[in-house]
Length: 116
Image (tube, rainbow, N blue to C red):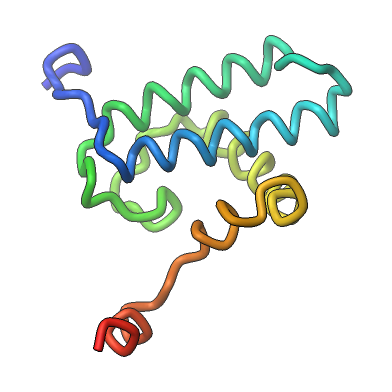
């Protein structure tokens, strides 16, 4: 099945992932490339990430990309987004504290205890 035939994933979980990824890329670009707007390299990365998330095979059931059995990013983009997330993660606590706390994965054991 080609990308054109795949249904677009645009549920709340995918939208949240897109927002967080965009914010992380913006922080990275601002701190590393010192511009107010995204540079061409970061804009390309952002577009690529948005596209890959839109066509995620798992949709709303997706896990973290690092834990996914299917790596849909090309090697170069995968390395780049890892670099961006590693750099931007700590800055997210300062610039977007609520989203960074919500983005922290909660283990299944703890989720079960919290839902009681």
